[in-house]
Length: 425
Ligand code: NAD
Picture 1: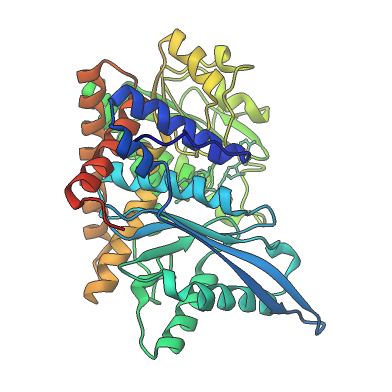
Picture 2: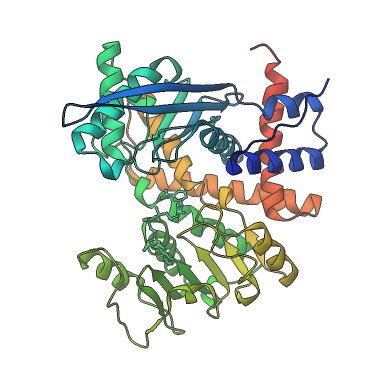
């Protein structure tokens, strides 16, 4: 018998559940599968007592949620942020299940965190938080159980403390338990550019399907950090013109096309790694949000969530949007873009290069054999192309938008796995 639909007072979890129920209904998913997939397999909460540098003790809360392991071990970040809570982790774990499923990699969805403000902790305090989180989560994480990675507030150093703690507790090195490690410490070459390459690969597949030559295409990119930089470079290498780039200092625009290598060098040499002061032949400096509104064919939001919304979507001139940031278009913005006939490649397809890169790191760690950057990129691009074409074909077959198609294809794979494995635990 079908259980009541779940709701949550946490906005993120409530939205994740609503999105799932809506797609499941449209797919005609059976009530049993809806019940199973709307619940997480495991929600773990632990206390994290930490001795602070002044000798006092503070107790933080630590979490890890495994939403589904139907397809493989959990995969997802560990967030250090003061607002982290169990429901937020569950929402993000659920989204990771769909993202990994769509990416076609053998992972389920996981997410975790600690409700600490890393900016208020010393390096030593952060290390104690990380080591205690790893020690208390030891029973629920592992290379074939649940594989955490960096997220907001964590990066390579935290991954090293996690691994070191587990290795010493178990008297056995197992680098595949965490991904996002520094290159040279079991991390992978190629990871830095992976998400941006993946975003651009989706854009180039889109152009191929539409019979459009990249050399006739103008691209505008909001955000010139890790993802925006490599997306821009890949588009230019394919022959497209990147007419606008932006960061927190403003939008830099040239209808003739910008010199992206020069912009990257400028950022590299800037003391704060910003575009501030960037100038090139015919380049104009525009206000911060203008990257969204300039004349172009493809817009790539590579910065923040919610940048296209009910208040500004009608001003977008691009015909295509490839979402690199997570959730850059609100549902209200989406509806307006849809009426204008703008085609959107959804975030969890377009930015999945990052998690596919984590999978590559895990594969290399499990086999103890490292790949070259060329091997990494060749495999990444092949998977991104296949995934794009799968969603494209599914959307055409069902006559639905790519966002809904991506979601339905992802849920279908997990539902099939649950059905094949059967209900036991
Ligand atoms: P980043 O911090 O390296 O770069 C962000 C860039 O956005 C910076 O250039 C910053 O100046 C700019 N920016 C911030 N606010 C802006 C604004 N209002 N207008 C214009 N530019 C602004 O971050 P990143 O790693 O490149 O990630 C970008 C987005 O992609 C984030 O939403 C992130 O969650 C998402 N994402 C990243 C990865 C990854 O592997 N890095 C994977 C999946 C999704």
